Length: 44
Image 1: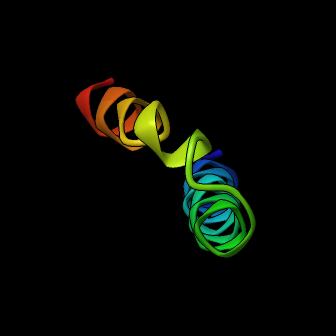
Image 2 (image 1 turned 180 degrees about the horizontal axis):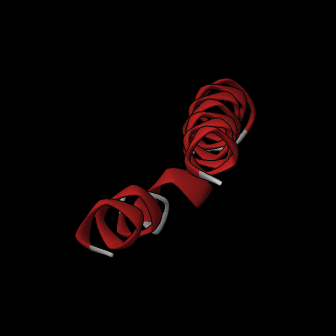
């Protein structure tokens, strides 16, 4: 179960990074609320 959890966390971090990088190049209004996602994920 532990390796699956690590893979899930790594996938979420990669997805968040792709989302942040994608929105920064396309739209400037989206990154305003994106930092709340990584902060909530790390807090949990």
